[in-house]
Image 1 (cartoon, one colour):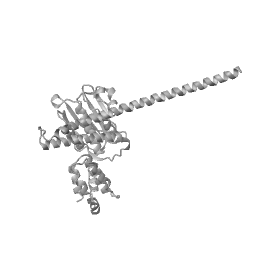
Image 2 (tube, helix red, strand yellow):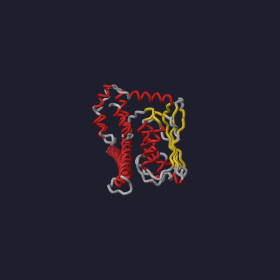
Image 3 (cartoon, rainbow, N blue to C red):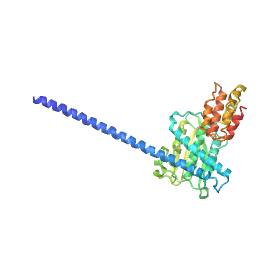
Image 4 (cartoon, rainbow, N blue to C red):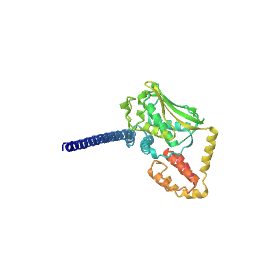
Amino acid sequence: MVELQRDQLSESSTQLAELLEESQSQKEILEIRNQEMESLQSTKDLMISAVNHDLRNPLNPILNYSQADYPKFTEKERLAMIHDRAKMMFALINDIMDVYRADKMQLQPQTASLHRAVTEAIITISEAKNDLPEIINTIPENAQAVFEYKYIERVLENLLSNAIKYSESQANGGKIEFYTEIITDDTTKKYHRIAIKDNGMGISKEKFEEIFLPFSNPNAKNIGAAKSVGIGLTFCKTIVEAHGSQILIESEVGKGTTFAFDLEMVEENTAKNSENQHQGELLLTDSEKVYLQDFVPQLAVFQEELFNADVRKILKNIEDKGSESVKRWKQVLEQSIDEMDEEGFKDLLELIN
């Protein structure tokens, strides 16, 4: 009898221990889920703050310049500035969406000019900012690489905007320089290492990884006085890695920062052949032009507002029907929309008339 009671007590103790263990396990799972929910809420709050702040930056001048009686500028000047700020907002929205769908991104890299990409990035950012540092482009005009132009240009714009943010004006000695070096990997393949160097505030080494986190707040990291909480550097990291490279950082607090990344180099002769090949692909046949002409009136409506979503809806209705030339024409037209290149857009429509 005593042995039976002992066995029952032992069995009850075992069951109780199992229940306690299960209870502890459930408690740990609950704590983990609570932490995950808190983390998601924190990310959500930062995202809302980022979008709120970074959209307000260009939106405020749009609201001012769009006033009919705004006294400081002519109507033409005001419209130009409104257009520039709208492009900034459009770029921010694109950055957010591209980071969000990074795992689904399909690049179409082609031979393109690094000098041109940097030049256009400088023009875009310079038009939207005042009291700039001295900005120098020393990248050779014949420097060619393989990359998706619309994305790498935005990377350059974001890196430049970030450098300006933490640099003094030219009057106070601020200086930013774009340059490139040719490097060779273990297989003797050559790359252009594109770098942007500033003499601004600098970043401490323990912050190198943090600055690429999405919706992070630079103020919380003590790396500068700017108040942007966006995803510019996150976007840069995403795009550069999608090109098979990585962003390199050299920095010293109080002395400046250099960001750099590598793109596959194209020799000058190869670049010319590639350029000629692309031009040849756009030599459409008469039947292809007849097919595309049906879409011209619809596309022409949007020449002055290339960011209108209806443009892309029309492009989706254009089938390449196995034609490499039509496929290429669509790709170049989409690139002109992404770059808001109104002249290029118009030229492509005239090509099929």
